[in-house]
Image 1 (spheres, rainbow, N blue to C red):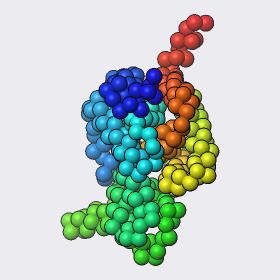
Image 2 (tube, one colour):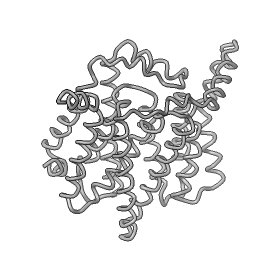
Image 3 (cartoon, rainbow, N blue to C red):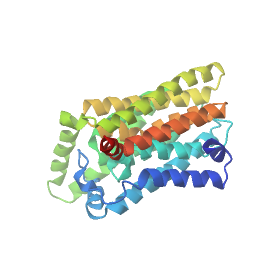
Image 4 (cartoon, rainbow, N blue to C red):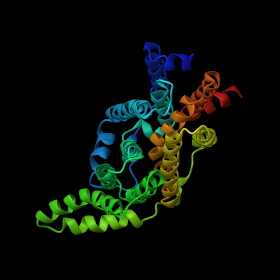
Length: 339
């Protein structure tokens, strides 16, 4: 039923998305103290996010939800424009909401969630370079967006390496393009330094030291501790990625080169975020930044399954497991009360 509604691109698909959204967000939009869940690497750009979380919890949750919906629509357009699938479906929007809804950290505004949204545009630009020779403008914009993310969280310095590897996986990467990525990445930081230096005080030196500390300081190992409910989330995402990888090997034999190339890029992004999360001992860096690439990878997988009943079973399973993740405490308390 769900797959049928989503595949028809009719009102039933939109209603299905709204119902699922309410199911995931309703339990968390009411008064959770998000101010206690601060970004572990606070920067000048992330201060306003902390202010919103402290002063208006409902606004924080609503803004986070709007970001997820907009990026879900972006996933839909991404798949359709590039002919990655022959099926026109709202499934990418639905999957984005499920995957994001299953992670508690997506229910409030934070720099990790913003990074996930930025990644959609960066991935879009990199995939657009496939089989093109004149890509300098796209390379610069993608690296510029990565540089803006760096201002939200200095640990995103690794994204410049992701750019190099990602672009290299799609095309021959010339030295000139390597140089452009460095220029684009450094541009936001250059203007920030210039603004502070013109101000005539030593704020730029404080910023310089803060950036070095942000890049080199490893978080407390306790920040990587995984709550019991998040094992469900990690298990679902891992199974989805493994299934999608196997499926895309079969797609490769069918010569759907663009879909396979896109999937390889997504896996590079996902693995890079996982490595960064482990290195910095940060669970949110490991998971929340991966919401969009995981959603896109899963969407490519599901919309390319020809047997729609199989896709439906997978979608129902994902919904139930993600809901169990979100309402783990309530479910556990209810089961214990029966004893």
